[in-house]
Length: 204
Image 1 (cartoon, rainbow, N blue to C red):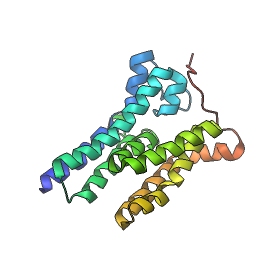
Image 2 (cartoon, rainbow, N blue to C red):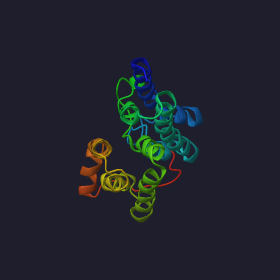
Image 3 (cartoon, rainbow, N blue to C red):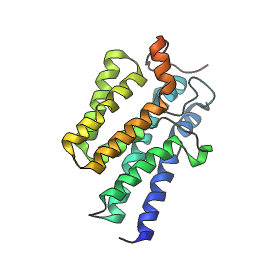
């Protein structure tokens, strides 16, 4: 495992995360720039609202895929014994989504990409977090609330599955980033002004 290989995997993780899937999907399918309408976010929820179901689904799958690809690339190029560097590559994919080099270091909130990272690291752990998100979304119909509930469960679930300090710290760090990116959503939730999740609400 060479220093060059490690550096390459870390750069690849960040570049993969930086790909603005939501922006590309919305423009390709509808011509809409999600940064200019709705919540002005390039993530799944806003793209779904302003560009429709197809663009939303493509955004969700693409953003998750970035996280999966970053972890799998780390495993492929670095091999066994490089778990910490693989975690770093996954973390950089999430940071790339949030601070994209292609969007002048702006971006989304990191939820779907983080789902992909943890799904690739441990399908049971990642699948459990996604399941909590889906159940919360079905119960409360509020995407931001569902995301925060799901990631609130992540550190504890990670400790149960992987009690190693580096893995738990990684989960705590990702959760902190997700909550930081949802600061405005938290304010709206407290005021009762957060919009409900809905399908196919295209911008006009």
